[in-house]
Amino acid sequence: MLAAAAKTLALLPLFNIIGQLVLVILLGIALRAIAGVPQRAMAGIQFSGKSLLGRESFCWG
Image (cartoon, rainbow, N blue to C red):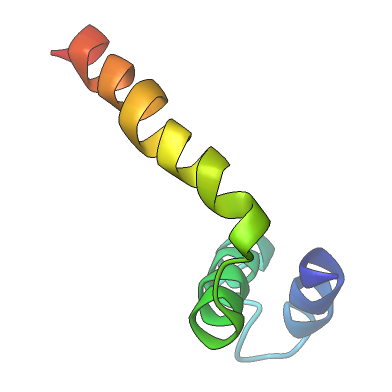
């Protein structure tokens, strides 16, 4: 859904400079700000934030 919207927006003259990938990221940020995060996704977000990202920063430095 977001990818199709970004692809369509990327065809417009103003938005084709930004690019489809950046547009889909911005649309995702806007959707999360408007609709929020579903409750069923909170456990996975918390796990990723604590476990996976913590290990990643340890590996890089």
